[in-house]
Length: 280
Image 1 (cartoon, rainbow, N blue to C red):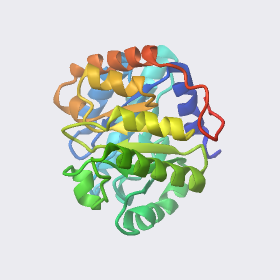
Image 2: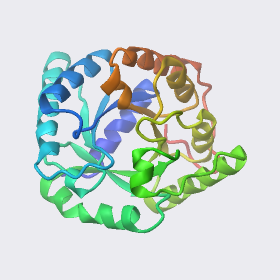
Image 3: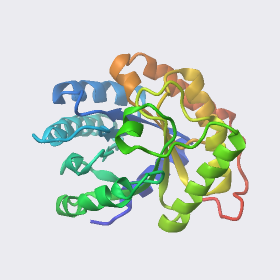
Image 4: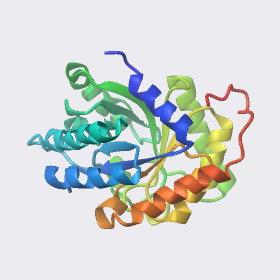
């Protein structure tokens, strides 16, 4: 297996579309049958990436793999109909969520972890399974940015302060630079407000990271409508993830996808990244 092929494919998708949408399936809340139905609908609407994972779920009966197999069946059917490739990527809350039917895994390091568990121990616990299953690895620096969500509670993440905004931007940019220097420009930075967050990450923060580094930026949590998606896309987000909105009201997804598309149109090209060559 050639490591990095899935990350490279995602970068090509980002280059092609400007910003892509990812659908997050929580295997704890979604049966294999329901997952297949949801994936069929979101792919037809235009979602370009499927993620599977949940923050607090410990898989003791192989449910992650059962859901992954169902999703892959639908992805393969979609490919036969459209000749369009879509990846299924694990977004694991812990090592129990590594499954053989995934195409790749987000190899997550929680950058604002309070201790070594989610920075080192949990990622290391799954490495043998990843190798055994032959999964590709996408290096992701994970930053939980809002308090009160399941992810924030489970990890006890050190949440960046809301105010002053300049200090928040500086701190998040420092995390981004740490990721760049430790993992290289091929890594992705995931700014996650958390599942069910009342508000998403500030679009100004996303733009600040993109102007400071050549990293691709994933944004998730709190994206529930056209306007939020448009602002994040216009401010240079590369991947926008929704999960809760898909679980609660799939009809909202079309508005979100339209918002992403409109945001890309509104962008002004960034000619120069401070001190670095722009990857795209």
